[in-house]
Length: 74
Image (cartoon, rainbow, N blue to C red; front, top):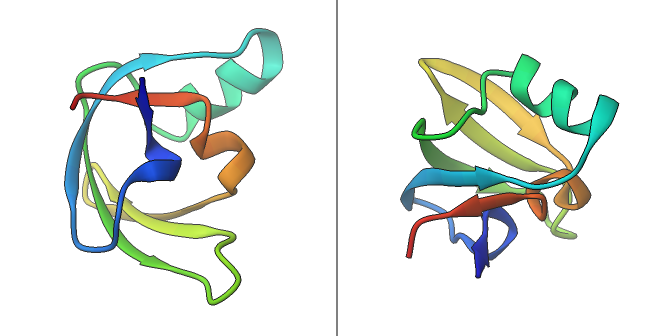
């Protein structure tokens, strides 16, 4: 299983499945990250946290802990 945390800068990925439950999953979905959406990895902070993404035409920063709950297609 490959997660968003494993993606590298410059890569375009597609969300396969969201893990997690309750408010955490709801927060990820509220940010626009849902099954089937395309995500472009813009950059990663020097210490690896957070990741800067382009989702549905807007910029979004996601912590590695949240990125680990987002399964992407191989």
